[in-house]
Amino acid sequence: MSGPAVEVRDLVVRYQGRAAVDGLDLDLPAGRVLALLGPNGAGKTTTVEVCEGLRRRDAGEVRVLGVDPAGAPDALRARLGVMPQGGGAYPGVRVREMLGLVAACAADPLDPDWLIEILGLASCDRTPFKRLSVGQQQRLALACAVVGRPELVFLDEPTASLDPQGRRLVWELVRGLRADGVAVLLTTHLMQEAETLADHIVIVDHGRVVAQGSPEALTAAGADRELRFRATAGMDLRLLASALPEGCTVTEPSAGSYLVEGSIDPQVLSAVTSWCARQGVLADDLRIARRSLEDVFLELTGRELRS
Image (cartoon, rainbow, N blue to C red; front, side, top):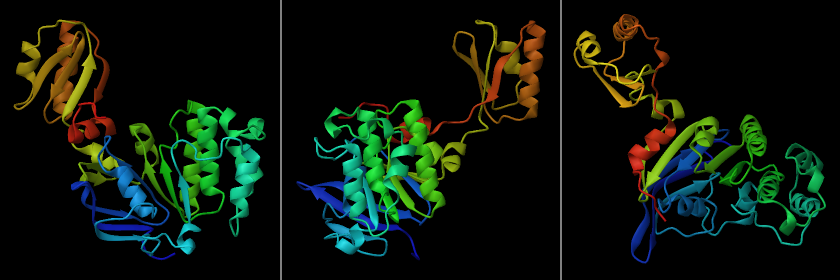
């Protein structure tokens, strides 16, 4: 297809007079992975449901593969892959039966046997859905979402409850989708997952976009403002503070863990190592700190727990 896979402009969705989504914009090009992040109640699930054609909007423009998803015409549904959290299969259906049924509805499906093999489901391919582990249910749901060769895939917490091996399998499949030109809209609470997979990240809170950009761009701010190292606890920092350039400070946030804040350059690094040498100690784990995506997320959305 030509043009973006998803275009959202000034989206508004209200529940009982309250705006769950309040003027949100979103763009997902073909062949890219977008991670939509936010705390509980931020509006991300509502936004995805509008894009899937499952929920009506109160205002704004939405185009999915060039089509308004309102009413979700069959021609559009056939081009989408949707992985709901929790599996979404009949309790008694077996793995191979379920995947075969979904594949039979597609014009040019992937080989179900291949998907069963690469997603580690071969050992349980005849097991009823209700007897699968949560991780196996998640992997089956992903297989069902992609078996029809969709142009756009919606993944809701795709690795929730998966062990590290299962998580890696899913990540490799998502990378394969992107390499094949498939657009992926991902929601996840795992910041490492978003940082690893996403080309672009959109963080929403209270129905609005509060930040967006590549993982590198979002975490780059302040990357040269902190120098951390470990050494003997309780050292006198007055001499180090006097040796640092103007505007730099040094503290010991926890025993033996030291933090220099300011514009970190070779002069600062030299001052720290020289001071440690004069104290007769070796600076360990010396590094210029870079904010993680989780740091950025918490700074923007707060640290309080939300229901």
